[in-house]
Image (cartoon, rainbow, N blue to C red; front, side):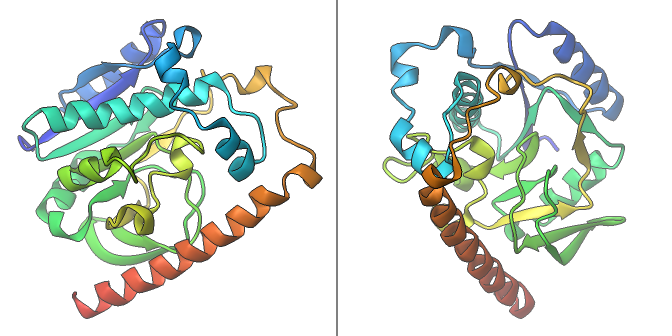
Length: 255
């Protein structure tokens, strides 16, 4: 575990959330480094310029929120800080995540089998239709995903993934979608993207989001303006399925 560094993304104005996740990490014996999140209330001109607004509207069918950009840039910064250090792996956590007791065992298992993944999701909003390929801890399987699996509150990356995410061009920037709709596109970044199922981390729905969703209830376009987004999603999910099936074949054959 000395090869792993844990980062917690946390806004300066959210000390209560930091205290909450600190208690969880202390209970599990996981030291961490706090990463000050990019605050959407004070975005700079350069930060705003990293958003491709036209691309976002076309692919997502709604108006972007400043909070989404702040979140996105916070995750990008976590990759930069990770690569600037000497750790081989980074555990990236958002401060509203729920950490289950099985997390340390899962992390140990993933590090023992580090050749089997580049980015491993440890939390999920949708199931992802997981296809197990390897047990990494008792009751937890490393799996290939065949369908959408959003959420980015907890995941593990190696240095190859960090480099791919920061590649110019072809990396995460500019932003054209919410972060959790992009970073698991293994076919785009040429990465082994996997999911641990059942997930050793969850999301606490009792904690209010800092994204600003509640203040923008009408941001979604009329369905007639969302046709490009529907077309994008159809193509994206087709690519995801093909990528997943190809990954599953390679796993089964031991390639």
